[in-house]
Length: 404
Image (cartoon, rainbow, N blue to C red):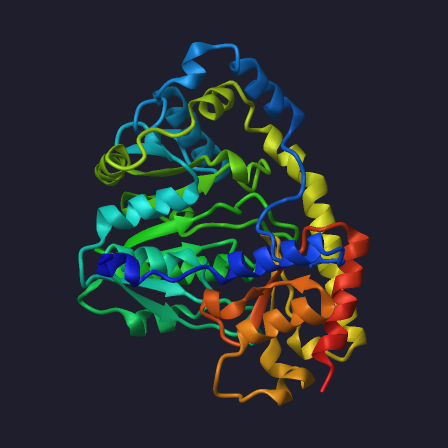
């Protein structure tokens, strides 16, 4: 069968392969520490669950919603973005709208589909979320990657973004708080980025803010458009309930942006998946979004405690030079290239997948290879499992990293 060049160019997810192997090992009775998970291992708020349960009684919960989502919820989510970012509500009254999708990944897919023509370039800040480059390539675009390193806590330099600009540059994706680095860009960085955007008035920003509420060290994440509201006219804000309500499986994300872009995204969605989950939408219409902060308070305390455990274990093992302070989301990037273990490998090649497979086979620990995030010879770990198994897993990891 002759497949399209489009699908031939897509990569398989190594994460899925490793998770399948981990499941097989668990079935064999082996103890596995899953540090690869990109989700909270808890249920959503009881109040949210009750809203879903209540909506089960209505016929409309089982029927199509409008392709872009229920208008009442779209207005509510737009208002939530404004209030949670301390923006005046009147900014969004006429010229902005919201489209609700089957997860934030679809929102990003729709946004890039509305913007990118074949040959267009989209700037990515590495480390980046694994799906960004694949979605860009799917639409015929070319990813242009800006690198960063552990010495700067994986925060890219705005000056490096400037050097990457070309006449073909259409958009830039900014993911703060960042998956996989577990950091959010500072107020100072956002100020410099605002000045940069003024130099390039045609550049569109896709601001992926799915982890915006999950920060465990102050100050809270801030955004460039808070410094200059006019930048909202070329910004698409991506958000979801997947992380903030521990609801990855409910598949509900959304985008807020200028009407022409949102309408274009709605067209794509209308001809692909149509409207998102009606039941979950209707539950959200009646849900008090202010409860998210209360729900996340113990989550953030737990993640911070695990981050502190990681710091102390790295220092005890004389690996402090490989450590940086994570501040948000719930991830940490391990730089293998600066550990004793890496002496076994050729320095000029990427061995992320091999090392991840070794960690699983010898230590029973699943991690996500960093090459999938644009950061070779590294791995992402999640800071969400319970404290005791997390301590055990990190203890095993530092022994592995010091093994020559």
